[in-house]
Length: 460
Image: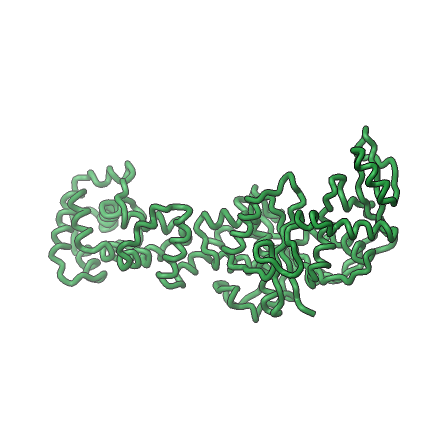
C-alpha cells in the first residue's frame, strides 16, 4: 500500500503553528515511506474562507520548506484539490444520494418559522428538488446507527465510542454545500489517503466519519490524533498566550529551518536539539511520537533560532536576512554593496542576537548614522568624553598593525583620570555606533576599520 498523507487547512486565516507541526509530521512520514504528501484546501466555509488566506497558507508552507506532490497549484490524478471546485463537479452529490438510497441518510425539510425544527423526513430526490425550487430549506442528514464505533488510533491506541451519544447529523446543508465530516470522508477515500494525521481536537469527529465509511462500504485509513500544543497555562495555545501564526514568526525574524526544528521537538524525541528535521527523515518515526501535550515556549524558539544563526555560514545567514528584509526592512538591502564589509558586520553581530529582527537592529549602526537617545547624548557631553575620544583617535591613527588584539591593547592602555574602563567603553559604543548595546567593542572597531572609526570620532 502506498503511503498517502494529506494536509487539509481551511483558508480562514493565517497558518497556525499547530497546523504547521501537523503538516511537518505528515511530510516527514510521507517522505520516509517514499509516499505522497498532498495539500487539499477545505474551503466550504464560504463566509470565512478567502483567496488571500489560501495564498498566505501556501506561502507559509513553502517557507517551512514543505513541498507537496499533489495540490491546487500542482494538480494531480485525484483533483480538484479545493472542495469548492469538487462541489461544482458534483462529487459530493453522488455519495449523499447513495447514502439516501441505501437507507443511511434522509432529506430533512425544515419549518419556515423555526429553522431548527424538522417538519418532514423523506427519501425522494424529486421531492427534495421540488421543495428546494420553491425556496424551502432542505438538508441531507446522516442516520447515526445503533451500537458502538471502534477504531485504533496510532497515538492513543484502541478507541471506543457509544453511538447513542451522537445525534443524526447534517451532511449536506440547505445551500447544497457538504459539511466538514461528510466532505472529508469522501475526499480522503477518493484521494486514496492511507493515513489521516491531525490534531486531537478532531478526535470526536472520527467516530462520525467512520460511521460514514462503513455506511458506504469503504476501507478505513489509519488515524492519528496528535496532542494539542498548549500555552504556559496548559490550555490550548491561542492568541491570549501571544502570537500563534507562522506568519508572525516569519515577520519576527525566525529562520525557517530553526522554526521547523523547534516544532519537531514538540513530540519528536531526538538526541540533539539543534538540527534540520528535513535532513533527518530516515530517523523519523511516526509511531513513537509523544502522546503528551507539548507546551509552546517562545523563548526556546528564539534560542533555537540563535543557535542556527551562529551555526550556519555567514553567507547563508545573509541570504536569510535578505529574504526577511525584502518584506520587513527593504532599506537594509542597500547594505550589501561592499559584501566583504557586510560579511564581517553580520559575523560579529550574530554572536549576541537570536532573531533576524534584532540582527537588523545590531547591524544598522554599521551602515547608517544612528542618533543616540537623550541619555546617551548626556554621556557624550561629560567633561572627560572629549579628551578620551581625542586620545583614542590619535592612538588608533598611529596603529600600524590593524587587528582585534591590537585594538583591544590600545583601548586598555588608555586611561582618563578616575573614569572606569567600563564607562570609557560605553562612551566609545555610543560615539561609534550610537547605542549602548552593541556587538563586542574590539571586534566592532576592527570591522568598522580605521577610516570609519576616525571619521565617526571626528564627527562626534
